Image (tube, rainbow, N blue to C red; front, side, top):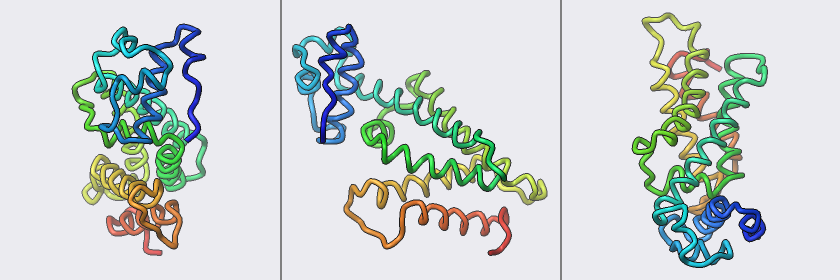
Amino acid sequence: MTRKDPRRGYHHGNLRQALVDATLDLVVEKGPFGFTVAEAARSAGVSAAAPYRHFKGREDLIEEAALQGFQIFADLMEHAYDTGQPSALAAFSATGRAYLAFARNNPGHYITMFEAGVSIAGNADLKAAADRAFGVLTRAADDLSRHVPVEKRPPPAMVSNHVWALSHGVVELFARGNPGTKSPFSAEDLLETGTGIYLRGLGILPPD
């Protein structure tokens, strides 16, 4: 992996972000539990004591990286949903593609958000960013099912959580290639067809 040069940011007074950037590289290289604060400091080009000016320890570093990740993720999800899609289904599908794109383009953030054991409920800013991101998916599910009679309409939060779980599974198995699993189909096709089968099963989409 080609690392950014965090020293340049540090010399401009941005030590905190330089350490977060170093952490993002390290979690991709070694996993969220495979590095120390001293390694993050060395990667950022500062002394082993420097990180403690801003962070209590590795967990704090990872939590800040996860917070920034959820903020980026929420922005992407909102943009995907609010770009004037021609239909509720197109808007819903766009959020799924945004999920896959985020996981591919921001692996360090994705790991800190979903694989590092960060307590979202324990950090108000983190919870707000996560709620904003997944609120987009819930809103998309609600819009998609408005044509279904109320008594037959599935709870939007249930639909969004099921689709989130499906998206996460596709990412873990096929988009990031972490377990090395291969598929003759693209991650986008797997997510689209899987979501379509699920939505048709609920009666939200007509039979194909």
